[in-house]
Image 1 (cartoon, rainbow, N blue to C red):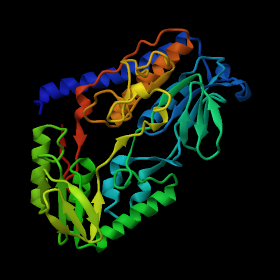
Image 2: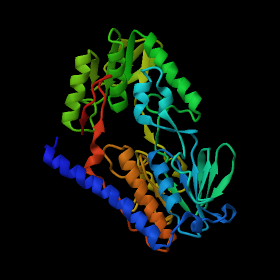
Image 3: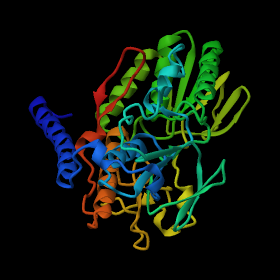
Image 4: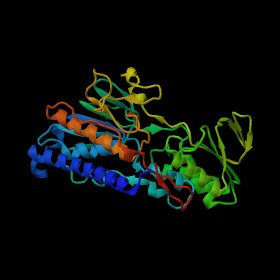
Length: 385
C-alpha cells in the first residue's frame, strides 16, 4: 500500500494525464480545421473506406468513440464496429448479480447512447461475429458478409467456455438475463455450493453467496497458494480474512479433476459432495480470428503480440492493431481503465496514419492499473492492489 501523500500525487498525475489526452485530441481537431459538425459532414454513401473494430467492450467501444468523433473533415473513411452482443455487458457486476436477484438488467447497457451527435456516416454498427480475418477483409458468421478494411483494431477481449459468472455467453440481453436468473435460483436452492477459481469472479461470487445465505455451505477451491494470486500480499491477506470471516471453506493448492452430478473430485483425491457447482476458471484471450493470418503473433497463452504502438508484432501488417484483454501488453490486472488507455493509443495512431503520419503514440502500463475494487460479501469492499 502507498501512504496518502504519495497516493494523492499519483492520482493527481493520473487525472492530469487523462485530461491532457482529451485536450490533445481536441486541439488536433481544431488544427485540422474541423470547426463544426456541419462542415465535417460527408454523405454516408461516399464513405467507402473502412476502419474496422472487432469487439465493443471497454477497449473496442472506446476506440470506436475516439475514432468516430475525430475523423478528419471530408474524409472517405468510416468506423465499422462488429460486435455480437446486443448490449454492452458490464462484466464487473456479473458475480454480484448472479447471486442477488432483481438487478441483472443493470448489467446490460444500450450501445451508442453517447454517440448520437456524430457526423453523418462516421459510424456503422454491425451486430454479428467475426470468424475470419484476411489481409483485406473480415468475414461475418451470421450473414456470411465480407467487409473490407484498410485499418483493423482487434478488441475481442477474453472468453470462457463455461460462461457465468465471468461472461454470459449470450448475445441477446434477455437470454443473458435468463442465464443469470437460473444461476440465482440454483444458488438459492442449493445447500452446498462449490466455487472453483480464486480470482476476482470466484472470490466475489463465493463471498456474496455466503453473505446472502449464511446457512449454506460454500467451498472455494483455488490452485494457487492464495486467492487473488496475481495481486499484492496485502490484497491476498484481505481476501483470505474476508473469506474466513464469512465461514467459507477455502481449499488452496488443489484443483478439480472431475465434476459429476453431486460430487467434485480434486487432484489431491479429495471428493466433495455438492448440489451446485460454479466454475470460474478457464478464461482465455479471444484471438482465434488472427491465428491463421498471423500465427507468429499469437503467444502460447493466446494473447496477440503487439508493439508499443499496439500494432501487431508483424511488420507485414502495420495497419492491424490489438488492444484490451486480448493484447499482450504485460498488464498484471487487465481491466477497463487499462483497456481504455490502450484503445486511446490504437485509435490515436490510426488517426495519425489517416493524416499520412507515422504512428507514434505508445502504451505503457501504469501503477493505477493494478487497483481493484474487490467485494468480499454484500457490504465489504476493500480498495487494494
